[in-house]
Image (cartoon, rainbow, N blue to C red):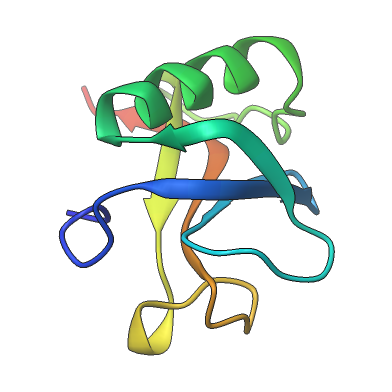
Amino acid sequence: MAFTAHKSATHWKEKENTLIFAWTAGPGLTPFVTPIGPEQAASIAQEWLSANSEWPEEPGYDGDNGKSQRVFSDDWGHVDDDWRCFVGIQPMWEIYGK
């Protein structure tokens, strides 16, 4: 859904354990070599989650957990209060009930 309004991401940044994609240049954003679509963005996000992200402490309760991710945008489809940034990805735990 994040790529509905913006067909590609041209820049990215990492802030507070969040990978953020942007659709145009701006301060603090690093350009991709070429614009990327949703498939490439998903692949980059999975690689980032595997290699660079810091997972929060695993929840302790009477059940199971699995590594997952939160994909989001905030009010008006922005991330990090920047109109250029349209999707953020964070590591999180998926909690499986009994």
